[in-house]
Image (cartoon, rainbow, N blue to C red; front, side, top):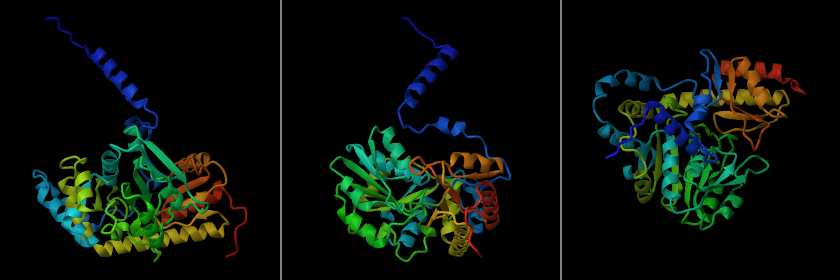
Length: 380
């Protein structure tokens, strides 16, 4: 019998050819994108990824220090305890909660579940792109609905875009990158207008930064509308972006369906322990919210004083109208060791700036005034 043995060079060539074909799929997010990024130098002001600059709860940090002793065990019992804690906090039953490796795993699992027999996903433009990226991987069509003139979700047009071919409609509330809000009344009317066969995925990653009394979580709509699923994350207010933990809340049947698409043992013992400690440290959440909202207000006041146009934000970032393409400004800030958000093609003049510490934002404003002097600063 004839045999064929690959040399290392032949094997490498075959793998490279396969990867080239895979990455040639239009719109497919790739690991190569991450490889192109250069490391951010130590000491840089990082205002680009909407992280919490104050980090995890001190109680979570203390818990992490003792996690080595549980590292040899699977975290099954701790996962159940965390699901119970999230359920209690959210006013639902434990079977209405499932954990993910970051909320992005939840978004991917929703696409895998509800786009299996559907053709498209409806979302705002711009919004957080993960749901659309995963849809492209599945060879499904993203249907983008432009934001309104005041940079908010155009809910009537989004609902009208849902057809029998639509598997998922995605609402990021507050929206990333604009920071704008869908109010309680608007969300209720929207959910009622969407066909029951379409899954409504509401991403509430930034809900903890909202102070507007018109806002309410979509969790309250789930008993009446079982086609609603809410995604949450520990990456933002809890300061655990690097630890990758998110969760979904939904009707029992929907949670069971998306659970089938998740990796088994998809969260680790350390992050579960840290999350439990964080949930039990509400004073730290309140303190972080107050500090970040105060700095957000300070930034917006400074922008208004300078006569700059910006989008009022309900999240931990602000979009500033630079008046022209933001790419040169991004590079100029980088040359000053300040990293800001990327360019968003549908609103190329707007620069997204994460709310950092007060001193970081003051440094950003000082650099902004040097790079783009205000045309008509207002009197103090």
